Image (tube, rainbow, N blue to C red):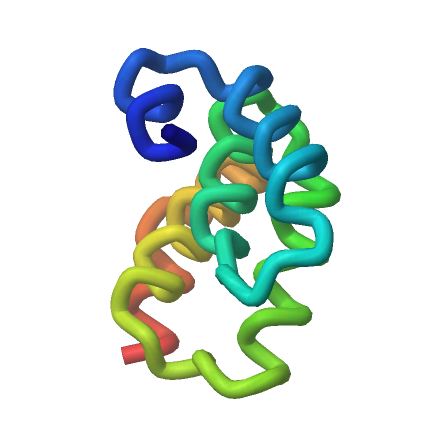
Length: 88
């Protein structure tokens, strides 16, 4: 359901569903949560969660690197693509 809401561009609804229905779940929806934060222009919480996720174990995950590049370009438009090139 979360992915469906994201595809329908209902990012706030997806965040609400993640918070309510997956709070105590073993299912990790961190990537989806970061993406929803990004799409709703909540860049600070998106970056915090991204850094937390990277520090745990997924620092070389290509999808996270791509999402990080999107966040950096949204926060600092003059550095478009820099994060991707540096991380690779």
